Amino acid sequence: QKRHEKLYEKVRQSLIIGVVEFDLPRTPKRKARRVKQELRAMTLQLKPPYRKNKILPIININIVMATEIDANKNINTLTALAGELLESRCAMYNRREDDLLRTIGQWHLPPDYLSLGKAEGRICNDVMKGGSNDLFVLRNLQETPYAKSDWNVFQYKLQTYVGIAVKKNSDVIGTLCLGYLRDYFPSNADKKLIGIIASAVGVEEERRRDKELSPHEIAM
Image (cartoon, rainbow, N blue to C red; front, side):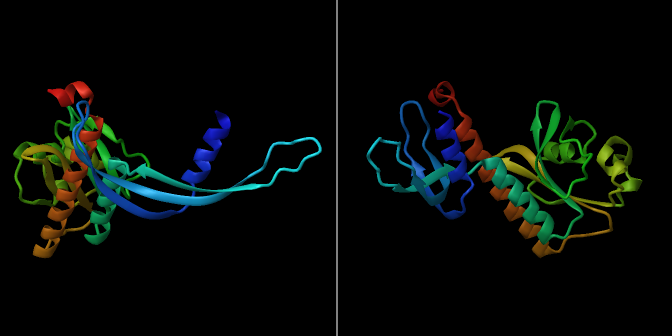
């Protein structure tokens, strides 16, 4: 078993040679869904077992591994993309979990940032409650009530908040947001860009949900 685990980890550490996508068909216990996988490949030499008075040849084997790309990993990449392209100080994607907000995607957040906290009083929570398809921009943050109710605004001295609700079908499930230490107002091109990225995050959330559904939930 340990040898198998070592071999698996060695292949996992090899370079990605490509990405494939395909439709996984529906079964009685599984909903049909779109699958995206990373491909890795490497050649390994296996030493033959010892045999008295006999030398066995070394065996070369070619291994190809396909592993499904994690949805949360993609969300983190999309969050970073938003922060880089829109030149913010930080970026995050927050998902609502009951009365809490969990930060799934992070980019340039401070080391002491708390990824799980109460939703009440947070700007992201209010953006989710609003449920608008439009980008929400709030400037001069230190002069707003959020300077007291949203710990992040006060702690990191944010000046501008830019956020948009992320939806799965028509349901709001989270918020993609950017924080700035300066006054900032997005151009029309910036607004379109963050809208596209937010839609991509929604797709990843749908993929994550489909993957996590139990057979009982699928049957329902």
